[in-house]
Length: 575
Image (cartoon, rainbow, N blue to C red; front, side, top):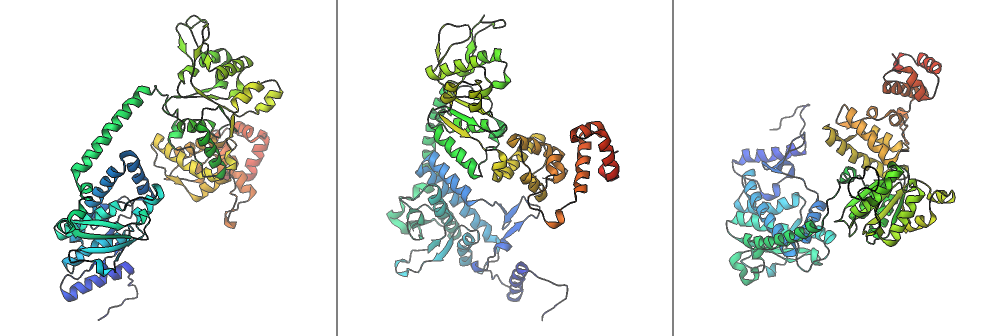
């Protein structure tokens, strides 16, 4: 008998559950088969996020590429053999626990259905597509299972991150299958991958047998499942790493604090122009040539300089930066070259200059165009002779620091005006890298903005995670004359003022929030009067309602402002 009601609706998941439950009621017995498994029934997802459960056990969603990168790091750090051992044992433990979880997740029709459920789960989770192999002539009475695997994520990621291998590489998947079948059959059953896409075969093909049925053929595979063998390999690697770390500590000098902006990933290169900059920076990093970084103020020249240092053989040495325009001329010489006790009033002890402090590393001379002719002469000599003379000292000292220089000035024009030495210019400009302004690499804006949101939220303790679509449009439409520095300051302000978990238009500075998006829907277009009203209100709020200051900021007279306020009405935000 069927019951129906006009307000009764059942979705696909509901019909699957109803069909299983009805069958249970009608048969009064356990009827679930491996083929009946539906991922929508196995997974329990908290609608608010945070917890995902599979058969009652917490699980995680991981990116395949991230797992591929982890594999490469394990191989690079531990070596191929130890990495295989780690991933095989991880897969084994995963398979064993999964078999335990599925044992009670469904009322299985038979033990064999539970045993077959592992392959079905592999398919549902997207690991691999297992297909029963049709080469029956090769299957013996001792074979528990024989499959072809299609679309193995592990073979795919190994080829992507490591390259073609000489042996089968589906280590985690083989370990999972070994763990699952061993638990399901209650005996040691090992899986061997005979063919693998990771080593150039057309498909991955594997076979599972009891350990005694393999004979000597399994001997080469057993060490990867044994804890003692893996511990030995890891112990050897640990000793090697400790020796290497000891050598690095002996060579490493005390480093200045890292730039928090760079540490937070602020060096973004989604745009073609910025990718070209970083590609050139990577290549020039491998040699010790001087580099001149040019570009507008705030584009990130110092970040690029740090990138060159971190990509260079000098990465274990210090990175030292000085803004030549921020230090008075009478102190800049001492800052760069150092001084000896008594060299001038206040020189009570010897002091090492930044060129010496950067020995073995990199020195960035920011705003090099602001230096005086006298400093330029001494810098030129240092670059040519690789030695310095401290202020007040007669002898020279060798230095081994790579010099990078940065400027937002047109040094060619300064040379013509006799403000900058031409010989120093060419000595610094062995390679010139021009960092493009933010308005010319708009693909980078939102990526940078999201990075700054994350950093600002961490500093201020605010739970702000991103932008509304409207706010993102404003960011993309704005000209960013102050470049990355202006963007970072604007985002920090927005994070502080945000009333919700996402930055909205009203949280942005007025000059940005009132920028019209490049592409607007007809319903989003406002009249000039509305735009003017909002802008005047924003300026008034920024100066605490002081009309005289607001008029000055708007570039109009106080009388004009009063007239506009009266015309726009009380919604303009004036007191």
